[in-house]
Image 1 (cartoon, rainbow, N blue to C red):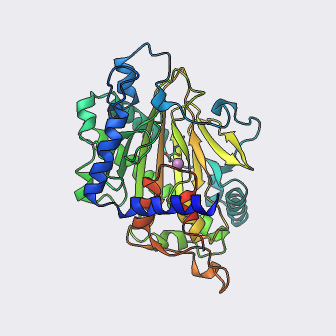
Image 2: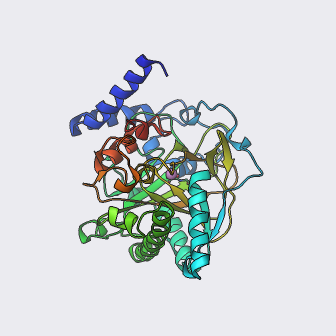
Amino acid sequence: MSTAAFLKTFMHFRMELKCSSSETAKISSITSSRHRGHENGGGFDYRKGVKSLLESAPHLQKLPSEFVLKLDQNPMDAAAGSDIPTIDLSGLDGSAEQKAATIKAIGDACVEWGFFRVKDHGIDEKVILEMFEVIEEFFGLNLEEKMKYYSEDVLSPVRYGTSLNTPLAHKLHWRDYLRHYGHPFPDSIFKLWPENPPHYRDVAKAYLVEIWKLTMKLGGAISQSLGLEEDYFERSLGEGVQILACNYYPPCPEPDKTLGLAAHSDHGGITILMENGVEGLQIKHDGAWVSVHDVPYTFVVNVGDYLEILSNGRYKSIEHRATVNQLKTRISVAVGHGPEMSTIVKPAAPLVNETDGQFRSVTYKDYVKLQQSITSRGKNALEKLKI
Ligand code: OGA
Ligand code: NI
């Protein structure tokens, strides 16, 4: 990138960060009117989401131009053949040798792939099934009910929306979503979770409690793989922030021309993902897009930006994206885990020697706001912190 282009992008980020609420309102109204496109379907308001668009045009055969992305290659042509490593987590509860071998396998996967799949994770299939059922029910509610949770504030504790997370103008992506905070489940936020379907809160909480426990177990292994004390990752989180993203990708008439979710890295430390049996996740590996296969009841785990920073760059957060398909609705549940919002994120002291501190310090809250607001995704937010 030229210096001028870099400066322009950087100033753009800073403007987004500094956005006062009135500026945000101004920008969102521009976004909204832009997305209330008249070219396809006579004034459909794209804020209502992709599911609603399809309901108003059930025989849609051409992708509305708002969704057509500039892509280097057909996203359906990802490299086949290789797959992320699978780790049997029961090894962490086994003999000392099994535990050491499992920790090493996790460390190797973090270095070589930044992504791995876990089996024998100990989470009951019933908890997973009920979670997917309740999410399907949520997206099946009428639009008015879902729009109660619509928000353009990227830090809002509960958000229903569509396309990317930012309200800033961008080419649309073929995704609707529900996002909200989980652990430590403060009452002030829990009472804002969707009240419909009626069992949503209990089911989602049960799922998130299990995912938090799994993440702390993985965090223990990851800490040890870095030569840190077992509870280093967990302690670094303070109370911690857990963010649930339920992604709903309806069938798409022209899946070769768009994406469900643009290439990005996750802002948290560890993300735990499960899908409804429909593939779509791709990750950047050795410069090429690789499809992650669906293996029922296994979780896909990935390194996020917070862990890249904490590990002082030894483990890299990996760009990933979601493709869509013509036939099936894909649902994925991604749960991110980061430190409490006021934490200054920085590399773990034992991993820094005097010459190699790689990242500028920033509060996690400012980082999340930056990362969630940008329309040019990839790893652009993390790049800004590099010294
Ligand atoms: C995410 C994400 C991928 C997917 O929600 O951060 O990367 O497969 N989702 O839906
Ligand atoms: Ni992600």
